[in-house]
Length: 433
Ligand SMILES: NC(=O)C1=CN([C@@H]2O[C@H](COP(=O)(O)OP(=O)(O)OC[C@H]3O[C@@H](n4cnc5c(N)ncnc54)[C@H](O)[C@@H]3O)[C@@H](O)[C@H]2O)C=CC1
Ligand SMILES: O=C(O)[C@H]1O[C@H](OP(=O)(O)OP(=O)(O)OC[C@H]2O[C@@H](n3ccc(=O)[nH]c3=O)[C@H](O)[C@@H]2O)[C@H](O)[C@@H](O)[C@@H]1O
Image 1 (cartoon, rainbow, N blue to C red):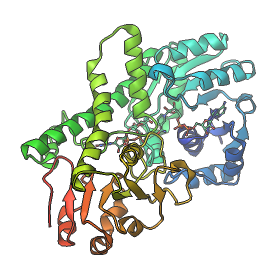
Image 2 (image 1 turned 180 degrees about the vertical axis):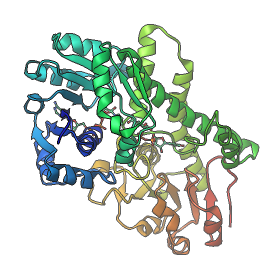
Image 3 (image 1 turned 90 degrees about the vertical axis):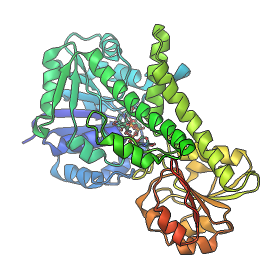
Image 4 (image 1 turned 30 degrees about the vertical axis):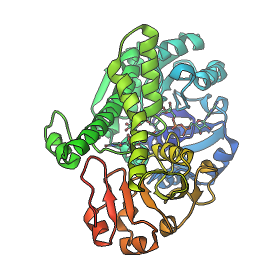
């Protein structure tokens, strides 16, 4: 017996996860997307994004009759009591979030919503959007609720079904409670608040995470200069429960489809309000500089000039466990290296050689050992677990110069040294053979 009738508009990382997970919680879900090809694939049970557990959940939902897919928002909302908007809110002019897709969908469904229906923004939207959408809807019988999503790519399903918290905000308390009730079976701590505060939580959280990583990246630079070891330093910090261990790993900078756009959006809001927020501006600036630091490290590792240097890149996605290349720091670093005249060959377990998304910047190969062939240096950019298990003796044998720049302190320096390779990490002393 299905409990609620839900429409989910947008079948991307957030929408498809939301639809499949809500169906698994016993709700009847209709998921809509404007992309006819994607809807066709989903109807056949084909999930084209790398999300562990999602294909199984989609298949189970379709088989049980609780999950179906349609083209276009309008056909999904007709008999829904709750409509989730899981639509893109990309970076627009001046860094502000571009709400045009969200607004066009609201205009599209406005006259088809049932009386008493609740429209829920799960997309990340700036403070004030719920009110703006309510005005755009122009219907007293339809409430707007903010229910930001905190899942991470690569662990979307477990994050959705086991969240640290659920945040629901609306100026209509009853509507917020009805949305919170959808998740009752999860037993998660729930923050019920007004719409503006719920919208703010999402930016506050993502910007805090970005600041944490920028902080540790700057610390890593200091550790290098001072002869301290950032791994020991962050372990020493992380035991303090007020700080915590998470998000203290230095790397090539934070990236992905959300942290960069959400930090830019909040910074743009602050500028618009005339509020100084140097802390956030510095986190963004530190992140941009981090790419330059990686390039300088590679330059030093190959002994000076990058022009004509043959570099093997390990990893291109913005982090391990996802096939997402949006705003990937690995790609940004690759572009800078190519700009200095380096010849780049890259391997990523989630990006096949035929993938058109990296065209021009790197030569993609399906075999990790091929990136080592005749290379002047290897540069690890994404922390895929499989890179740890490479046969380093074989890698060393293939390389022209035996140097590895590990931008995430992901590899075992001793294993590399034993194989005859020099290892350069971040915020740690190099280990030379
Ligand atoms: N990717 C992530 O890990 C997270 C994303 N978010 C937020 O969720 C929102 C969506 O992000 P993603 O799922 O990553 O985006 P996505 O790009 O993966 O998915 C968006 C989907 O919306 C569809 N779409 C576009 N226009 C449409 C229309 N007019 N009607 C119906 N469907 C339409 C697209 O075809 C696409 O399938 C963004 O605001 C993002 O900031 C929030 C938490 C996590
Ligand atoms: O709003 C969103 O879209 C999501 O953004 C992030 O999730 P995600 O983009 O999947 O990626 P993260 O796991 O947060 O990593 C972000 C970036 O920071 C980097 N990172 C992370 C942690 C760390 O210690 N060091 C570090 O360099 C990662 O490599 C990656 O480039 C947030 O973690 C989610 O809570 C949020 O829902």
